[in-house]
Image 1 (cartoon, helix red, strand yellow):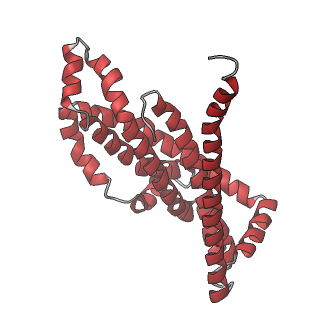
Image 2: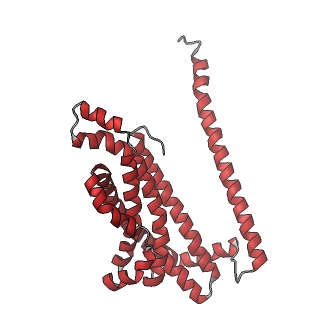
Image 3: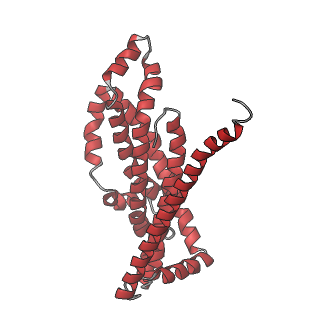
Length: 272
């Protein structure tokens, strides 16, 4: 390419950047519009039903500032986040290998499947009393409940990912001389990672559902405990603060998980 054509090349290269910039601006505008509509509907509901039933966005914001200043909000966020991350992480550490094993070994799947199918239909809240009796009111009972609600989702997702692998791929790898460990590393694991990531995201959502019920029953600190204590004090605005905090926290956790998982999946040319 000659020097004369260099400006034209620069213009051509700048076109995708401009398009990406316009696309990002469009997405940001849509998010802002959606947020504005949601706040408007919220304000109209608050005006219709009154502060005794629905706290307005302004009341919720001022209450959040009040709870943040005295430290209760941050203390609750840290306590709940720690319980969720530990229980959820343990669920992935156990569920993913178990699902891969069950998907690959038919005998193990037949032995474990009745228990998986039985316990996954029992909600964690049914075990709250037993968890407190067995493990006490400390952190262990709440972490175990979150682990319980996470492990089955991840396990089933991993199994489905393994079983969805075309048999031709496995036979081709075997015919090329790959042993079981190599097939697991280069065929099974890459094909199963997207399903495991999806299961992990679903398990994260269920962890937030479980933490509220666990903290309401057996915790003095946490977002669930804050919501329950606010109900006892008749502070609807504090209840709204707790609910909004849960949503924001879940949104942040899911975004971080998607970013990290996206980098992992990029190694396998898979988009999240």
